[in-house]
Length: 322
Image (cartoon, rainbow, N blue to C red; front, side, top):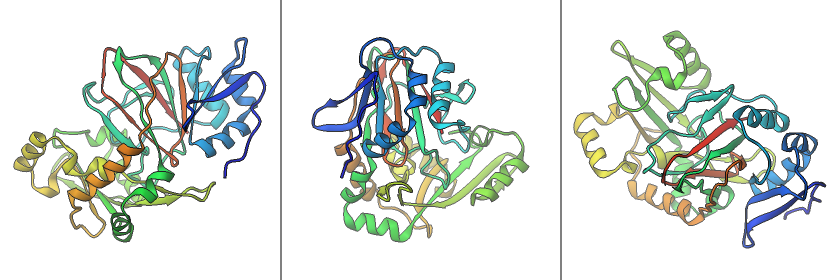
C-alpha cells in the first residue's frame, strides 16, 4: 500500500501517463528552482517516493554540466562509487561520472539491474541527459517487483534452487580486457579483488584470465522487504548474441573459453528457451519515455531495471552511482 506523501513547496509531481507510476516526474512549480539545493533539503521526501515508485525523473530544471550533476548526486546520496568490475565499455567524464554504456547506436541494451551479475552493486543509479538523440535512444524501465512473480514459476523455482555462475574470459581480443574490467594493470590487484569478492580466477598463459562467480538469482530489498528478480542471465547467456556472431564464436572457441557466458551454479547449461521466457516478461513490463535535454533520472537499482533503445544521431547520457 502506497503512503501519500505531501509534495514539498516549489515543485509539483505527476506521472508521464496516468496509468503508470514509473517514473514519478518532479518539475518546478513556478519560478526557477535550484535543483541541487532543493534536493538536499528534501532527501527524506525523495527517498520515500523512490522506494514507492522505483524511479524519479527531474524535468525542466536548470542543470547543464557533469560537475553540477555530480554535486546533485552528492547532495542526495553522498559519496559516489567507482565503476569497478565493469561489464560494459564506459569512459570517465568528470570525477565519478561516466558515459552510459558505449554500445553501437543501432543496438538495444536489454533491461537489467546494474551489477546484478556480482555480489556488490550500487543502490542508486543516476542518469543525466546532456544531448538528446535525433531519433530513439529512450531508456526503458521495468519494475523488478512485478517481474519477479511474472517469471513462470517453474523457471523461477529452478533458477532459485540452482543459482547462477557467470564465466568470463579476458585477453581473447574480444569483449573487455581484464585491465578495463578491473581498472588496473596489476595482476596482484586483480587477484586481491577477486579473493575479496568471492570470484574464482585462473590465469591462462601470459595475459589471459578466466573468472567464475556464483551469484544470486533474486534478492529481497533491504528497506521494503519486497522480492525482486535480480540477475543478468538474460544478458550473459550465449543465446542472446545474434545468430551469426554466436556461430562464429562457437566455431572459434570451446564453450569454456567464450568471452562471457552464464550457467547454473553447478556448471550445467541453461536452456535458451528459459532465457526467452524471462526476456518476454521484461519486454511486457517495459516502460519507455523520451529524454529531454537536462532530464535527470534517479532509480533504485534493486526496484527498477533499465535499458537502452537504439538511436540515430548524437546522444549523450552520463551516469553516476551511489
